[in-house]
Length: 99
Image (cartoon, rainbow, N blue to C red; front, side):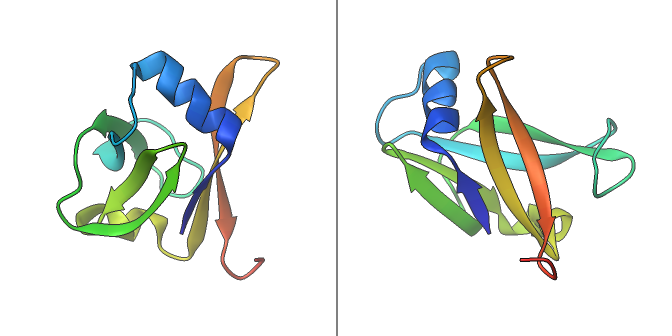
């Protein structure tokens, strides 16, 4: 599951010059830091989905994860929120057991 708040979607629209109908893919990259998988982190790119495992649409923008990267999110809900104080988005991973 993926969720994104409207303020977070607006941040992406502004920062990435997005337009209605655009799509943002979240994918796994080797290296970096993550709260759920050591040695892996998230990256993102603009582009249409090929085989989405899960997605959501907010303000006309589709945010998704491909099936090939779904393992990273196993047993977690992926939430994207906006932090006004820092003018940035944050990623939260909530265990499905707690939800």
